[in-house]
Length: 140
Image 1 (cartoon, one colour):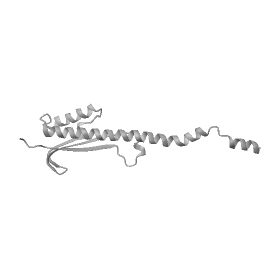
Image 2: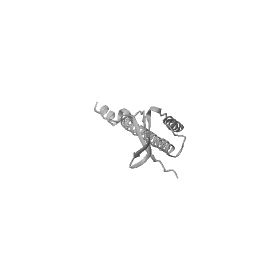
Image 3: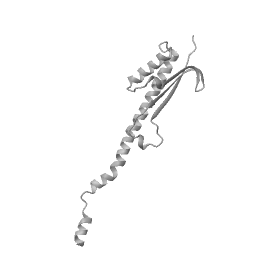
Image 4: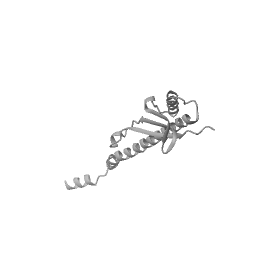
């Protein structure tokens, strides 16, 4: 009986499966965490570019003269990057002091970010908020 018990304890078949079962959850959590973190940073950077482009359009172009044209410009710009932004998520202001610069155009965008990692990040509300300003240049 002791010989049989010793052979069972010495048997290492299946140890790789056991090791993988212990390591796999951490590995996949890290893998998907890196992927989702990269998606989040890309989305935030893209929305910042959209907000900046819209604020610049408001300051130097006549194609963003009213609120409807500004929002349409921002929605089209975001759509060209594959991000679906709604008109309600865009706020534009003209002639405001923004980050210490008077008479600037300000654009803020709030966009929901759905992620498979939401349950693993306590306090994450799934919302990306960006703001950009561009000064209105004096006419020559």
